[in-house]
Image (cartoon, rainbow, N blue to C red; front, side, top):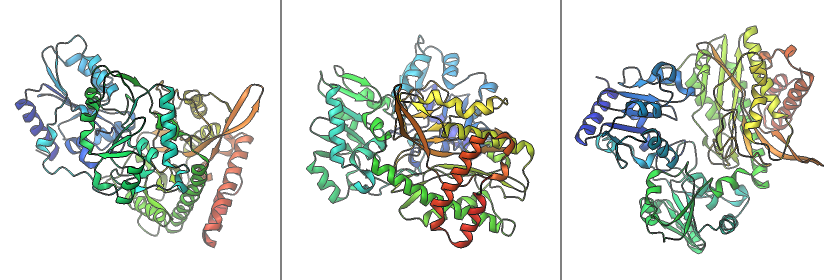
Length: 596
C-alpha cells in the first residue's frame, strides 16, 4: 500500500469512528487564498495531486477528486495508485462534485466538512445540491489534524512596512477612504478576509504565503477602530507603535469568530461571500444586517495610482532585463550543456534575483517542453523533468514579486525549425493577443465583452482554449487578483467594468494534447484615451517587455496593422532594455526585435 492509499485508509477509519458517511474536502485555508500555506495543503498531502484547485469526496467505498480543465491531464497522472479516482466530467458522468452529491447522498447520511476552508458561496452550493434530503451536517470536522502527524507549522516570519514610495498613498488616507465609502453605504463594520485587501489597506507585507508577500490575518474596520487579527509576534515594535496611534488593535488570529459573535444587534456588516468562510459567517449573530459584495479595498486597489503605475514600469524593465539575459543564455548554451525544465526554472529565478528589490517568484515557474506545454498549469517534478532537446517547442510562464510590483509573462519559443502547423497555431494566438492589446473601448465595458477579441482568430479556425483570457494583477500582492477579469463566463469578475488604472493579463493560447502548447502572455494597463460626444474611451498599454519569437510567425497571416504593432512593441522592448545589457546581449536583442 503506497503512502496516499495509507492516508486514505486512516481517514476512512477516522470517519467511521466519528460516524461520518461523506467527507468533503475543498482546496482552501481559513483565508481562502489561491496560494495557501503548506499547513493547509491537505489535498496534496492526502492524494498527491498538486493543482491549485480541487475538491475531494470520500465515503467508505468511494474517493473522488474533481478539478477544472487546466489540470485534467495532471490529475490523471498524479492520482495513479493513490486510491482516488479522477472525476473527469466525460468519464464520471457528473459535471462537478455537486452533481455527485445530489445523486449519491441519501436521507439520514452524515455529511462532514471543515467550514473554515469553504466560502459562504461554496457552502450554499453544497446545501442547495442536497436540498430536500434529510441529512445531518458536521461543519467543524477536522479529521486531518488527527492523522497528519508531521503537518507543517504556519510561518513565523515577521511582517514589514510597505513604504509610500511604492504604495503611493499613506495608510491613513486609505483607511479614511474606506470609512467614507462605508458611511455612504450605511455600513457599521467591514469584515476583511482576503489577506491582500488587508495588506493594501495597512501598507504592510508579510512572508506567510509562498509566492505572495502576505501576512495571514483578518480585519474588522469600524468608524473609529480597526481590529487586526494576526500573530502579534509577527508585527515589529515600530509598526505596532504606529498602529496603536491610528487605532489599529492587534488581536490573536484565532479570536476572529469570537469577536464577530459579540457584535451588537441592529448594526450592519459588509463582507465578501467569496473570500469569507462559512465558519466566520456562522459566527455572526442574528439581528445584524449582512451586506454581501466585493470588499471595498478589493475595488480600490484594482485601480493603480500614479506612483504604483510608475513603479510597475520600473518592475517591467527589471523583469525584461532578467528575461533577456535568460533567453540570451539559452541561445548561447543550448546544445553545449544539458538543460531540463527544472534547471531552466532555477536559472530564470537566478537572473531575476540579480535585480534590485526582487522578493521572489510570483508563482511556481512553468517550464514546459513539447507535450508538457499542453498542460496549462504544468509544474515539473523530479519524475517529470524533461530534457530540452534540439527540436521542439518550449513554453515558459513565469513571474516575479518586486517591491515595485508584480509580473506575469509567458513566452513560447522554438528549438530547431518549427512546422507549418506550429507556425499557424502560434500566429493565430499572436493575432488574438494583438487584437486585445490594441482595442479601443468605451468607458463601462466589461471583461466578458472583450474576451472574444483574443479568441476570434482561433474560433475562425475551429480552435479554442479552456481558460480565461485575462486576470487582474496585484501590486506586490497576488499575481491573480480581481475583481476584474477577461473571460467568457458569467462570473461577477467577468462582469466587472474595466477601468483606467487596472492591470490585466492578456494570454490567449492553444493546447494540443500530447504535442505542444502555445501561450503568449503580456500584462496590459488600461488608460484613458480620448473623450468624444459619445463619452470617454479607453485603451491598453502593453507593459511586459520581452521579445516574441519571430521564427514562429507566419507573416503572411498577419494584417499590416498587426505587423505595425509587433514592430512598435519590439522597438519599445529594445529601447527600454538595451541600457541595462552588455554589448553581446544588446546585439542579440537587436536581432530578436528587428522589424518584420
